[in-house]
Amino acid sequence: MGKIWLKMPGMPKHILFAVSSHGYGHLSQTAPVINALKQAYPEYTVFIQTALPSAILSARIKVPFKHIAFDGDVGLLMDDAVTVKTEATRLAYRTFHNHWEENFQKQLTILRNNKVDLLVADIPYLPLLAAQKLGIKTLALCSLNWVDILSGYFKQDKEMEDYMALMRHAYSQANVFLKPQPSMPMPWLANSQTIQPLVTTGKNSRKRLLDELVVEQTDKTILVLLTLGGIDSQISLENWPDYQNVHIILQDRPGASGESLKCSGKNWLHSMQDISMSFTDILQSVDVLITKPGYGLFAEAAFGRKPVFYVGRPDWPEEPYLLQWLRDYVCITEISKTELNHGIEESVIQKLAHSVKDSVNKPAILNTGTQQAVDWLVQLAE
Image 1: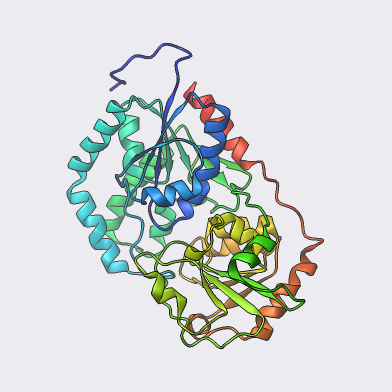
Image 2: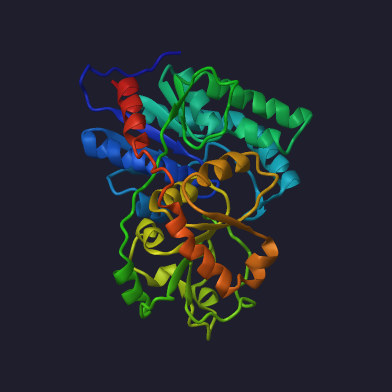
């Protein structure tokens, strides 16, 4: 079935970005592309379809866009930031596919009503399939795909294999599947193209950050950002040791109150909600990042030469590729979930913070991936 609307050559284009709401990593990949695209082609109309809140989108996307609150995939259900709930995930997929026709028709209506010329997915499969049915060009953009991720948790599972077959079809039928480094290999995708990393480049504003935290800079002052990528970590810092020269900035967890983050009496602990700077500027202004393996935070840490403590996710299929890549750019140290719940010794934090001098001779990131992605988008849209 072809598109049911007509546009004359040279008319402004309508591009819909379908972004998975599984954490913030998918948004972190698409945001720099959306910003660069709209700045270069202000006449384009950009739609962002995702279940993520508009406030989260606006924190990353600095150009005009229209938000469509609709999710085109399930992703994975998480018990915490690093633990997958497999049976709950299976049930979520079953529910999603029990309502497949209803969801599919809603997606078709969204595409028709907004006269979409190009569908970009990171990486929901339902929007890809709907756009392909309408003859709309499609571009998949992600460092992973749900087939290779789910295959790691659901081996020889007939029900999940049926769902994954739809995903395989959606991804393989896209006009192109762009894989920003570091990505999973995806050898089965004949339409894949590798591009350089997609990074939102923040600004190092350390003095401003110190002023907002009301912290005096000394030779021993270490600023740490603790964030687990938009998924509730279910950790408490109540058991962490009191620090003398280390200050930890905690990204607010979804649904957590500001009061619960401040941990009364801990003057070394700070809430990001009390800082007026953007997330990317905060990350580039600290000395150390504590996180879990994930594309966006790893890419931004590598760009800013920020050493990383990471909580391992040994069952996460993407993890080995992320870690292998990050080691080329900064010093990294694995910590356990026990350390995450009971704290890292100040001397250990100081040691990793000062490892930045060891990264001087490591290669620099080629920050050209965003332009490569924009070039592909424009080529398909025109």
